[in-house]
Length: 197
Image 1 (tube, one colour):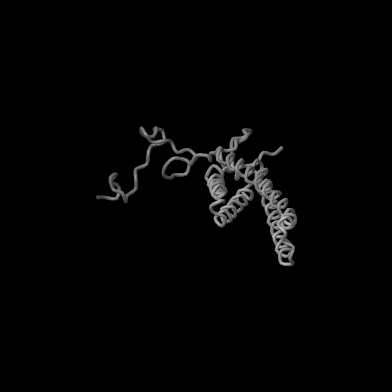
Image 2 (spheres, rainbow, N blue to C red):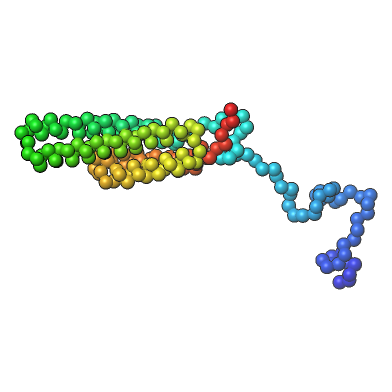
């Protein structure tokens, strides 16, 4: 093979005359740098996630709505249970008096039981109010609300395990909250771009 031969891959390629059109199937290279493949496409905004369609409000996914409703229900039940525990704590003294127990040990036991029930009731009210705040923030909250909800539901699952078999319902509902909020559409909802008003 000689240096000027057209089939030589190492040789110089013959120059095309200026007046001819390029061959069939070859695009004209005007102002483009030579390279492989097609030009890069512009980025596309996704309906979920960071972008969203401009001017169109994103609707809350069904799983996130379900998690929000479950959170409202469990938080309300926590507050009602707390108020019931506090009410029962005040009836311990009267029940011991009806039973005829008037020793110092019975009084100490009644005071301890009353204090424990009031403490559990106050803790349960705090947990219930925290759940209500998280449920209220689902509409406008960001990824922090999502993380706090997952942590809240994880603690709910943990405490439900210690209260089995009575805590089966709250165990299942806590797991459902975690699953619904941790799914991809839940993550997209909480990471979406917020509307500026």
